[in-house]
Amino acid sequence: MTMQLPEKIRLCEVGPRDGLQNERRFFSTAEKRELIDAMGEAGFPVIEVGSFVSPKAVPQMANTDEVFQSLKRVPGVEYRALIANAKGVDRAAACGCSKVKLNVSASVAHNLANLNRTPAETVAGFAECVAKAEAAGIGISGSISMAFGSPWDREIPIQDVKDIVEAYLAVGIGEISLSDASGMAYPTQVYDMCCEMKRCYPQVNWWLHFHNTRGLGIANVLAGMQAGFTQFDASFAGVGGCPFVPGAAGNVATEDLLHMCDEMGVATGIDLDKAMAISRRVAELVGHNTDSYLLRAGTSKALFRELPKGQIKNQTLK
Ligand code: ZN
Image (cartoon, rainbow, N blue to C red; front, side, top):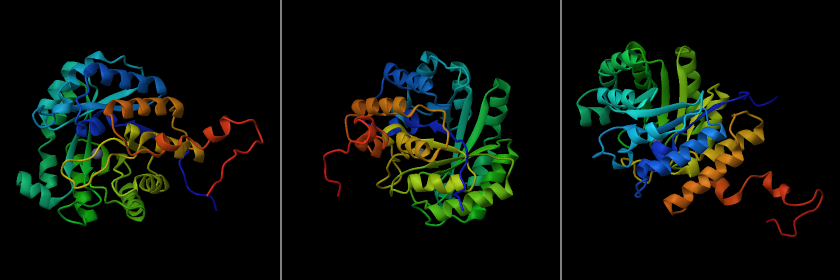
């Protein structure tokens, strides 16, 4: 019996947003542009450039408008951004961003405490964003963070997640990401959730977004693939975290995910060596160690590139 895997997947590089928003160091427009332009050249099909939110809340993203204006856009590449409300749509339209993403936490307790509304009620309030985006010719998608568990309520009932999916569909959003910002997802749970979501909502254009907080990020991606999901977020060098989640780590490292796909024969359309060069540059710019296996060890294939065929390295493997 062979393992069920897709022939190809699509990856969204969220490092410029989810990764850099958690870094102490501010990244200039020129630095972000350098990284994003290199991604376009390396074959990344989707890039989350930044977010249009209050610069007071997330100072790292204050230059997102300027970054969009400075990009060398590669035809066919989708450059997207996270927004929090209708103001975000206006900013997106003004700087030529063609896809925006809204977010809601799946935790009812979290939403009631913060917004005095359930997650589904919060999503119903996004109707204004959808109308504005449509009028401006901008695509709009939604994400559900804490879909696999949250620090407020260990278990999120699957019905709660379905209620949010239905609320998104009701306002006209059919591209939805299930996100594990809290790093609590595990592979059998991901597989079951994804199978159920695909069965109930085959019309949805699904994405998965895993943080590697407890080392299960890439295992969760594989579980999602086995359930037939083909779109995944990842972050260069594995940078990132989440200010609301204790001990949170970044997303699955882009190069780790690409390497797994390369080894398994799952196409991504992205050049792994070029992606690794970008991640090395990111690690250099952030100035600290990051959560990336590939940056430490290199690719498996590179072990054999350095030596003539048949020659074994003079070292002890333990
Ligand atoms: Zn995230």
